[in-house]
Image 1 (cartoon, rainbow, N blue to C red):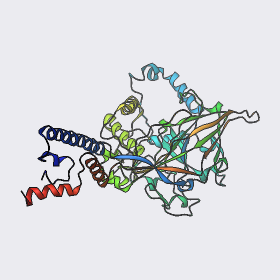
Image 2: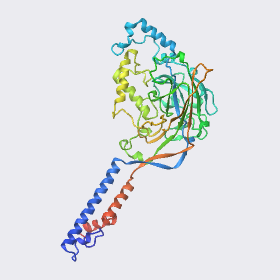
Image 3: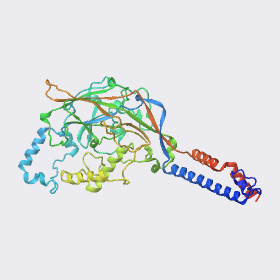
Length: 471
């Protein structure tokens, strides 16, 4: 074999014309070469096993009309009218032995005695939409009632634009959605799916509404008002007084803890820059531990029809609170048999939410969804760090570009006019794909073997031939 081998250097092992020193030299060089080849092949193998996914840019730009316009939720600056909070403060003074604030964390508050649920009570005392949204202008629609619908959040009753209706977003049974959120014709047709995108071309009025294009003339113009004299500061500990706004995916239920404040007496312009991350179908063959994301059909949520990281964490928070307090907050998703926490359980609720935020790498915490459309808000100089998701559309470039004080001496109420628009008509998507497929790995190994030893597949056949045919 040594005298006829095609592997570089092996012929010199048995060449009678070579001295012992020459043969020893070629044996050493062969061993060094094979060792280097093995080390590099092992390094390639480790890279393939430990980090098999790579991010690249796609070749073709995507028009913004192929993605939904950002969904956003707005909460009024005062969760309850000041008149109601004044009644509570008067009760505190009359019943100070029962309601001493210094003992809130030592003595439980009393429970509600009225048969109404806490969700119903919150609805009854919340600020109506017409009291904090004065006018709207988007896509030739000027009716705020048409553009917005109510949604129950951790900050009370808020309003939302462009989120899927509950019958397309939630399974049968979750209890915390307002009964007044009745589906309209434009809510009842499935025209967009997180994985497939839009399945129809002519969907101008259907939810979720498409992006209309770039520039301020395609923007959502909104005038927000706040009655400073009828606003309780006891329910809002923010340093900046104003409306809270959260941008999110149409399939994400809003969690207002991540919201930002639009201050009073300012004109605010918010620019939107999409970031699309697609995923090669071959990535599905890898376990989720490797790709660090889930496809939509790989994880079942009890309350939500669509798996997203946000929805998973909301469900986990509800389960965590139930396990810790034996009840859940009025705004959390819950089944019919789950109890809503009373005011006397506030201390436990508070600690449950704080403890949940500090948990890391527990099994109940979710990863990103496979075909997830997320809309995130970022101020200048800050960008939220999102978990990797298999197919992801994010609005990571939300920036408050224009933030100017304005004075309206002829108006009693404070006014905010935010302009929300997309900055470009098309954008380059990123694609998550295999770093090495099996073919790529074999090609890399073959290249290294050829570089170091001159070995090919026929060289292996040659070795087998001499081992079994001509032993």
